[in-house]
Image (cartoon, rainbow, N blue to C red; front, side):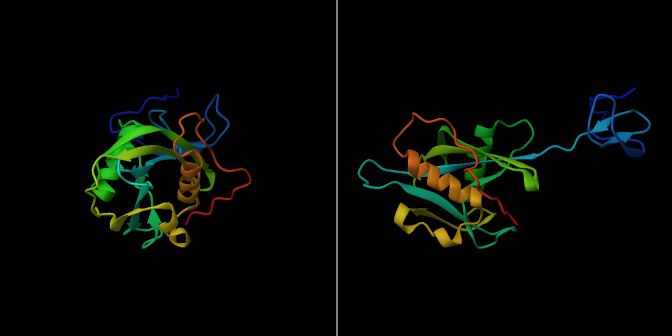
Length: 192
């Protein structure tokens, strides 16, 4: 008798062992007492390319955060992080911008979904507007900044997916007639 719904506490309460459950193809941790199957699934990361463009500005400015936490301390990234339970990816992107850059944003649309299988991540990246220029470093950021395209510190970008998102944002700047992007063809993802 194998149960797919979690017991109280959300994890097996008795001794577990590894087996391939009936109807499955992969080894899983299964509770010997209650039959609960513990599925380990990819983590979802959500974030946004956040743009500040007041009416009188010539060029959009992109919000970047210099990381204060591992991995890649001191490198620049988009405001992004792990999705919380019970949260939509849009709500998570808004929360991450608030936590990392004290920024209030409005989500425009989905820009990309990246698959980083090596570390079991799926990343959803949105295009968003910065609702106020008031930003400041949150607990996970050393500093934050608003960069025009020419001043983005490309050699100090933390992760390949951040570079992809920035490039794909600039490719579609001013357009709404595109499907969400995925991993670029033949792109390798090395995230430490």
